[in-house]
Every structure is written in structure tokens, then in C-alpha cells.
Length: 493
Image 1 (cartoon, rainbow, N blue to C red):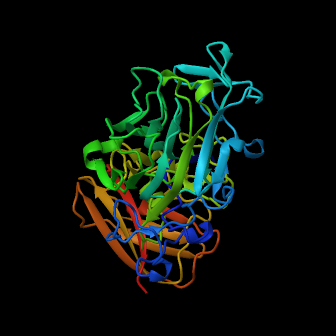
Image 2: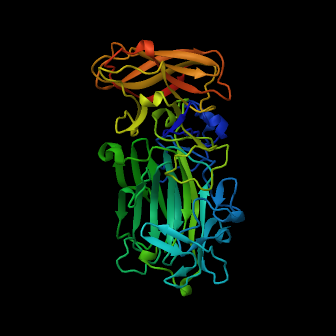
Image 3: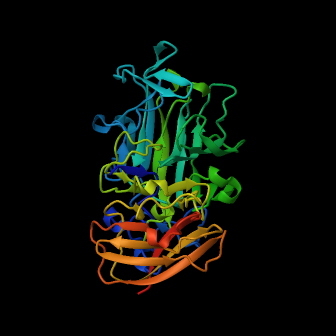
């Protein structure tokens, strides 16, 4: 039997950063105040914390001490390892340019004629440059980049920072499955007159990396022009609040831009967990730095992430059919690109067998939330269901539900016509099956179904979740389509 790896979802819900990934399958209960620190700093966007933000300590960093915490951060080039790329040529990321001193992170850009640059090119759209060279001549500029080792889904992220005073970027950004959020791209001293990023401007961009990832990948952007300061002269606070269906951009605690999925439709691509990057690059189309102005530092006083408690015990994105489920206890592959749908030990996908794949597909554009849902396609008057069961199955270990009383909810959209009477949701180890009755529901609208259940035994380490349609519940002919989205479980007792 052939197995198709069908694109979907994500294993990591919020988890608030107080737990390892194995316990991250269950987010903390919203009534559990033990995880809230009274001494935590509050977001600049919400100084009194009226919205109940909780600092994600696993991701946040105050940059104290004399070196970077490598349990928290991946340093590009450390031990010869590079994640995704070596930097935007002609500059190259090098680990010795990552410094922590004076209570700050300093990502240095410097002129290093003796550095042994990678003997390769980096292709970026119409740009294809060689490391350490520019227009046929040496340009031995080294830079730096760090990336969080953990990802997170939704929250408020913030830095207090100052760009380096040269034609070099300062960037605070994040990537995840098929998505990128550039919270800011700054350029300390552009040397090209028509540079789109000025020394007193900030650019925020969202990129859509869903295949085919053909440039330009911009989904939407925001430019703040004519700041009352040069970004290389002063420290300022920059933040982004990323919600399930909105994005807000802040500067010094003031709201500067607000995007919503309602206005963007399927251009809303921020549906999966992301890791945070801090780096400096050369944007050679906006100029290259001169030897005389180096070295310079992109300085960051802190990087903080806040989130909110969530009482949904399921990974929201996985059961919203948006992207891969993440197993972050396993190493993130160094070659993992945001557009990659290749299953590995770090990211896994729904399993739909060959016979089921004719009827179950994960589709874009029909959704209750996010941009995807699971579609049962139905069949016509001269057709019949050609398999005894239609099944979508999660990977092993993708679910962790405790013993006790719970409520399961989901949203369905039913077309007019001959309807499949029911389908089944089940936990596989130990086995517990929940029938979902579709009769007497309103048609052609998203309807929420709730079902209480009792789990006598907690999930095993290999527990799976199954969505199943059986032939006896399907019309003999003319079965109409329906959609499933937003499966959730909440503990009630």
C-alpha cells in the first residue's frame, strides 16, 4: 500500500516555554497561575499587561553574561554548521562575530581579508553572488546570525536594538512552514540613492513560501518612513503581535500597522509556528559597506516573547490542517527550508493512504480558520465509494490527552444533497472512538459540534488520532462534499 504524505499542520501549540516539548502537546491551563511570574517584564505595547501576557522564558534572552546561551540559540557557522544558508553573499556569517558584552548581544560586521570564505555562490532571485567577492574584486566582509532553537505559535515578540552604522542590515525576523515574518529590516547607512530602506526607515514584510516559491514572495508589507532618528544612532523598541488571524506592528510601544486575515484572505500565511532570527546581511542592491566604516555592531539589549495560556489540549495548527507537526525533541535538519514538505524526524504530516486520498484532501481556501481544511470530496451519480474506509491518520506520538473528562469540538461545513450520516474520530493507543453525527445540521455554513467524553487512561507515547469515514455511513451514489476544521479538546474535570 502506497502512503501519501499530505501537507498539514503543526505539533507545537503555545506551551508558554515553561515545559519541554514532550509535555508541550498539552498547553497549560488558563487557570493555572503557577506559571505566571510576578517579576516578568511586560510588553512595551501593553505596559500594564492588561491582556495577561506570559513571558516565554525558553525563547527570551536578556543577553547577560559573557557568551550566548547555545541551549537557546543556534549560531550560524558554529562548529562548521550552517542552518539553511551561510548568509547573503558577498558577506558570510561567521560565529566569532557573535558577541555578548555590556549586557547586549552584538552581531558584528567586519572587514576580514584573511578569512577563508566559502568557495561557493549564493543565489537569491536575480542575485547570484560569490562569498567574499563583489563585481570581480575581493569584498571580505563577515557578518553574523543567530536563530532560536525552539519555535512558537502566536504571541508578542519584541527587541530593543540599534542597527550597525554602515551599509549592512539589522534584521529581526521569523520563519516557519511556508511563511516568513520580517518584523523589521533596517539599513544603517545605505550607499545607493534609491535604496528602498533608508537610514531613518523600518520595513516589515510577510513572505509566502508555499510552493512554488517563486520570487517575489511578498504577501504584504509595511514601510515606516521618515523616522525622527537614524536607526544606527539610537536604541528603540520594536515589536510584533501575531494572533491567529491578525498581525500588529509596534515601535516604542505605539501601534504602527494592523493587518487582518479578513482583509487579506489567503494572503494570510502566518499559520504555523516560527523560529526567530537576528542577523546582519549585505543587500548589495542597496549598497555594500566600505572597509573604512567597519567594524560595526548590530546591538540588541534583549529579545522577548510573550504568549497567552490556551486550554486547548490539541496542537491547534495540526488539527486546523495548516502545516507539519513538529517533534522538537529531535534536531532540526540544517537543510530544512520553509517551503519543504519532506517528512523527517523533526516534521511529520498527516498520513492518507492511496485509496483514501481519492476522497480526503487538505484544501486551501475553504476554512473556518487559517486557510486550510480537510475535505471529503464526495462522488457523483455514476460513482460509489471505492474503499471500505476513508482514513486520515496522524503520526505516532502526535497526541497526548490526559485521563479524565473532556469536551471535543470541531467545525464542519456540509453541502446540500445526499449526506454522509456520520464519521468517527478516535484515539488509537489506547483505543477510544467518538462518533460524529452529521444528520440534522445546518447546511452551507460552518457549524460547531461538541461532544463530551471520558478518557479512562492517558495517551501512550505512541498515541495517534484518526479521522475515519465508513462505507456503511455513506450514500450509495451522489454523496456530497463536506469539510472538517478546528478540532479541539478541552479538559473539563
